[in-house]
Image: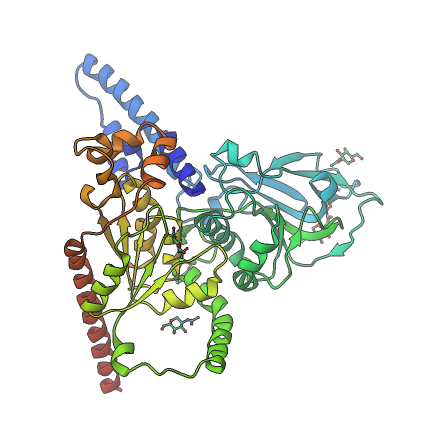
Length: 497
Ligand SMILES: *[C@@H]1O[C@H](CO)[C@@H](O)[C@H](O)[C@H]1NC(C)=O
Ligand SMILES: *[C@@H]1O[C@H](CO)[C@@H](O)[C@H](O)[C@H]1NC(C)=O
Ligand SMILES: *[C@@H]1O[C@H](CO)[C@@H](O)[C@H](O)[C@H]1NC(C)=O
Ligand SMILES: *[C@@H]1O[C@H](CO)[C@@H](O)[C@H](O)[C@H]1NC(C)=O
Ligand SMILES: *[C@@H]1O[C@H](CO)[C@@H](O)[C@H](O)[C@H]1NC(C)=O
Ligand SMILES: *[C@@H]1O[C@H](CO)[C@@H](O)[C@H](O)[C@H]1NC(C)=O
């Protein structure tokens, strides 16, 4: 729910929604803008004015999409990122990205939570370090002032060494400071704003790192415990509640973020990709899944599936209740079974254990769901699997930006199923020629409150099964072909040995 609020904020930020088209189109504009003006003076003048406005739109465009790339830097060279090398006894903040600020401290870093401070303690004899203070809210939604206002602000200060500066707890590994406040509570935001940026920022430490968390929630730490233990060998610190002073040789305050549910390998110190992230998830959930399997073996008589059942491709419906639910879900299940899928209906709740969701999706070939935060679980699908996103009226832009594009980057086969007006519950509520049915973009232009009320909270889907069937049949064919191709290549491998 919250999730959509920012989407539309974001969209409105840009005033012109077309400014969020993919980069290449934009790069073309940019070239046009710089075309040499060799004609008449008037033409020159006209061109100059045009170029200027193109340039302006280019700049605001870059600011929108640049994320962590400082505007002038080539993306592949780590060295050119601001603060990429921080000398000892210094403090450096990179405020060049649109989505996030990140500060780096090296030397003796000491926490003082009563004053929300981190001190960089330097020797007074060594006065090269002058007194300095930076402030930062370590959360990845910098462009949303109302969200950022809810995040605690940290003061990063240099201080001369005195007797007062003792350490209650010494750590010999760096710390990463971040907040689990803001939109935490919505699974999309938990991954997009928190877990993925944490991976982007901290994976280079190879678990030799302590996480210090602002707006700490016990439930968050236990929900994501499997993942946290793959990223850090140490228990996390609750910054506000733990009043002891912790000392670190280095601190990173704030998290880097690249794109929606995505990782740009070119900007990773260890060129990790979203697939590496997924491989990390697999390792994170393996121990728990093995436990669950053991438990099942003990409690249930092994109901051995028939060979033919387990060979069928598996389709998971990620189900929603109420708004944006599938009204004829029961028929959809039957349809998918008739086509030749094993079908599982999964209705994830906020309390559903992630390992169980991971297990269901990691073993499936197709995931079907209506656009919404639960689509975030596409991260649990194996590359090569199929993701069918049902796109209700008025949600096209968000569906593509937040889930369609990330799915493709992960290597899923993405199938977008944009419903027709007749498949929307709104068809029963509005006259045929109402803009709500005919022109959702014009309705969305009225603002987020309208979008939320009409399309997000007020719409469910009744799939045209004739039409939907075609997509499923194609997906089924694709999976069987892929399977026989794989079988062929493994048997070729075997023969060549
Ligand atoms: C950095 O500074 C700290 C404290 O001033 C010192 O203990 C440490 O040895 C220094 N590290 C390096 C690599 O110079
Ligand atoms: C500051 O301390 C470092 C090592 O701790 C030393 O190399 C440097 O010369 C000192 N600078 C000054 C101005 O004393
Ligand atoms: C430390 O003390 C020196 C003078 O002794 C002063 O010049 C310097 O600014 C002080 N540094 C900080 C961080 O307070
Ligand atoms: C990562 O980068 C290093 C150095 O640039 C390169 O040697 C290596 O092949 C890259 N790894 C992958 C998986 O691309
Ligand atoms: C996920 O699926 C793959 C392929 O079937 C399997 O090798 C892997 O062990 C599974 N991961 C977990 C955690 O069960
Ligand atoms: C879905 O909603 C209906 C009524 O609105 C309720 O009876 C049912 O238990 C709900 N199912 C789930 C899985 O929450």
